[in-house]
Image (cartoon, rainbow, N blue to C red):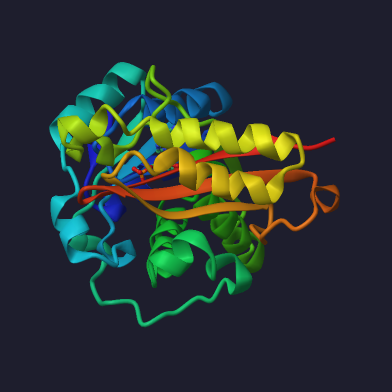
Length: 282
Ligand code: AMP
């Protein structure tokens, strides 16, 4: 496995592979890797000749300075995990390499970014779009792998790729969970022990909402989730949305939708977690 820090070195290595006709899969991450990230690497390995994992904590997508400061950074451990997983190339540039100048660019994703993460984290998706575009230019992958865990991010990137004609094929991968149901996340390691033991209730709340959605009790679902979570005083619910699986527009009538995404965001202490379940209808 090769580790590159400079786009030029990465480009030279990838150019040689592309000349040989090899297909390249990219897994963009912010590091502090866990089994969820590794599942993306494994999928890419199955579908491509060469897998590149980028590790870059992107300051542009953080709207909270403390969150950026506290974001776990474990590069050496990550490199070992990637080596074990059979990843071919790690790209781990530093901030000054990626942002030689601050991009004076604002991309508006319309309705898709007015809800959920876009609403509660102003500027977040602009930062995501800029770093993902840069990575697509630097790696020029045939396929790029993203987790359903960040569903809205996936849909935003899909819009970005369609709008700007990136040639990459996007692949959405299932959410990998801890045994108790908590969605794996780099932020989980920042949870206080007393918060970690109750964090899986976000997933349980989603399951409860799913049950009610399947029984066509949409209005009850939101209420039921709030009621379910209310005894857990240290879980501060930020949003629970039942939205169309493709547009994220709030669902009014189930029969107008082929899939519904139930999405949740909550703070446990200082740590903000998100999760979702997609319910396929018909
Ligand atoms: P991050 O390092 O948090 O930016 O995540 C990098 C990629 O891994 C994103 O596409 C995430 O959606 C994906 N990812 C994060 N957590 C999980 C998980 N539990 N299961 C599957 N994919 C995940």
